[in-house]
Length: 369
Image 1 (cartoon, helix red, strand yellow):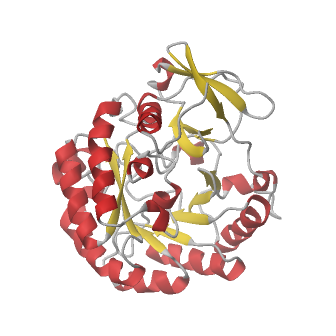
Image 2 (image 1 turned 180 degrees about the vertical axis):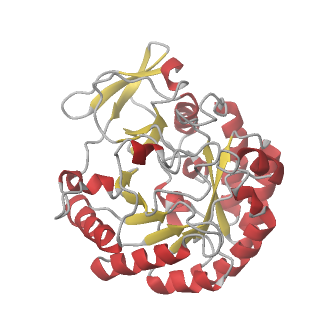
């Protein structure tokens, strides 16, 4: 059997269902995976109908998913089943070649940056956050400290290390863009300074489009400095659509209100360009579909691309038992949002770098077609 392409109604539904339910896999399944960290995690990369997507596999929900994957063969090919019925063949991509290299001081490249989706390199420059250690202020879904505690990364990636890994990832694996995010190190520049320093070093070493991600800095002059340092796009992530949900789920980050984000977006878009400023919205934290779509409409008017992804509960966080959004809920958001983006001529394919361009954590791009 052949799995339908993501541009079809049945293809969109399949990927949306997979990202909501997760996927049962065998312990022997290899490929590219991500546990813990600062963003959506507990995923494994799969290629389905020619598209590379991230699907939850390490969550409690995934262990009870109706979707199963057979152990892959030597080429990474696996049979995808739903409730025991064969749907077709998927692939688990092999680890990229740059993962086999280490720095001169012995740090594996994969501890410095990881491959996301098909060809996006991503790193958390500062693997710490001023809010993480105190659950009264931390984002309840965040696992930024877990991968550090498990020795899967290092606390701080220097500009020289990032430049070295980025160059190797481009030369060995054809990486096409890079995401630089960070835990929030202070409440003034909120990480913009370290991102600018990192971006400058990477762009001096390799011609690679970059997205930088941080909370809105107090001084909006940082947007020009980030642009001058070589950043092609900017991510400032609201995570939730309404202030009430933000205060409940991310009490510390919610002190930077939605209105302050909107002001920051308005300052950044003229510098980076329409559609080159993005925000991440996690569907399933408590916002209604109407709440998310109302915010998305405001963002699109400003020229901001709203990248809506299904919330994935990460093991070991306060929200590890929080149910992910249903596939029906995701479709109720993504279908109208796809139309809104299409009508506004704001497409993920036009984003120069970043999560929206990669698109692997959401089926949103399929709804733009």
